[in-house]
Image (cartoon, rainbow over all chains, first blue to last red; front, side, top):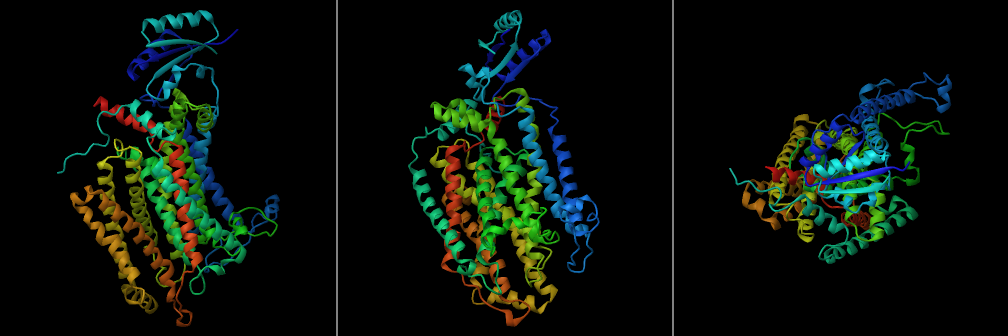
Length: 180
Length: 448
């Protein structure tokens, strides 16, 4: 079975949202929108939570690393293979002097969160994806300027034909069919 | 009070902003003559810098003026100056994103690009200034055959991780924000090579619902991370000094004092970049008199913060009553090179007071002149801190005067070349204004 894409273009964000809602209500399984800017009220990304967790991990790693380096607690264990730690007298402070550890912990935490956010974004969107069958449409280039698109991807020819009919009746400003 | 200046000129549409901004990147601007006129001299300066670095590697840091009592010299002076300029860019792009101000939208790309290259200039200086620069990675904590760790209680190690996190964070923040604009440029590109280049750079961003959903979420959180990070980075730079027992450095006011100065010089540098850019690339519809006005007010505010810090610096010297500090400070305000101190005060605190008056904020040539004065004034401030303070330490036998050498100046000129050529190249190749955010802003204005 070959895959099909039915692409509909709309003049405005309002027309597109209306159409997308209508199609989803009709029961179309996958209605993907492509828009020049984010649709209003897009919520529910897990990435902020992931970034927060990564930040905590980074901060904890930064703290553990410093404690490891300034104590000999782990030298007897397998961890000792990393070189082992040793205390140094800095201005008569204790070896584990937490106020001195704050900047390093803070920065590693933020660094981990930034890296997790960026690569989380790449992974969740399965980027880089340099080619998609939808690119075959010349009109689709407008999606990054002022065109508002929705795409229905299906392997069923009846769904494809029905989608085209619905888009035609809505009406969409322009309808295209592409091989998926 | 005053009439409201538009943040975008009327008549602009999401389509027009996309066309105009991608057009500059795609080589459709009316003229690139000015760009070449700026880029070629920058390359020349960069060449001087490259030659200085080679000369440095061949001869060691003896080619600089660094010597007791002044072992930091120009490299750390210029490092602090560049990282300060970088901070201002991040402050605009991250902090003002969180506060949802509209004028930030059209200048954040320029500000962030400025941040990237000034942070790069800052990043190489401490490495070059090491006696054996090829061992700079010893600052990284990693298991090694010497069984040695960096000294984690030292502000210099904090500085290393802070600058590293800042540079990596700035690149990611900049690149993520750029993805939708690279996609727009890819879609407007006419030639095959441009389509491929921008297509690869955009990673296949197409503006799907999922992509926007995650984009918005991650961009917002990244801004919320970068805003405190930029304050922490320059605070840690302040701690590099405050952590030493040098009279004049050993003060608790240093971290906020450094942050004020950093943001101040960064705003001035952004202004020096946006005013010519909007003229040469016809971006006046998006970078308006409103932006200039707002930045002038911000500089006035930070100038007052800085004036407070200068006053506290002087106050704590006399209140602390440490004879060596008083001697050092007396030399700074009345010694043979006291002109540096007074020029700092005049350029950073006195002249910016002109921004109280609207007429001065609207007169662009004067604004440019004052901003240039601020950038110079902030350099002089760092000269006072890095160079003049160690002239007089506790031990009179260790007193001495720093003399910059030809190579000090040459490498400084080289970093200006690195900044200018990198900035110009980037702003030529990528959209100089955040198109996706401008589209939203213009759509909002049109709906209102």
